[in-house]
Image (tube, rainbow, N blue to C red; front, side, top):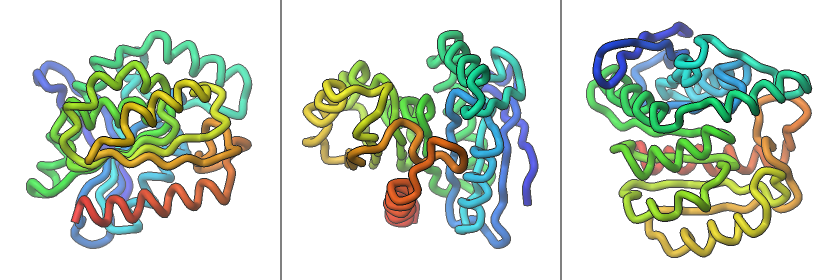
Length: 232
């Protein structure tokens, strides 16, 4: 069942919507799907539906609601890509983490206190790392997260499993940043990094020009195995 859920902010003084996809049977756990810079668009909703097909309650909060609710962009359309980049500059990441924390709280209540994971892409990959370091999420996955070298100082706070997928030819995450990520995280007992040589940022998008089928399939299979282990 597909619908939208109203999520109360942490302070309870406002609310925002989250696309919600329910499995046919009782959810075995929940997964929060964290958007790219393009909002909760068709691709993010499809990812939620795919997780629901696998038995998870899937929830994608509209993290752009503080700028303008309901933003949906197509990354294959140049002007919309540019709009997404502008939105990234306006976006309050600290407020977004609070909104993700509120989503964790409400989602966990929806499954009677069960385990909740998070998976994010691009901007969402960065937020997935921040979520792992700053909340009580049970497990997190980040795809081609941007600017993680600037967050390595928070690695000590990661208490639950975190999986990161790194695009080898990522135009937004150059080789020196990837090197710093490995140097800062390879020895962390809770963090696993996978590299995908020769692919660019956005390789695991649901659809469109950026998708690289072989790499996306491998990364998604690893993510499924990761959640099956850590959200059981």
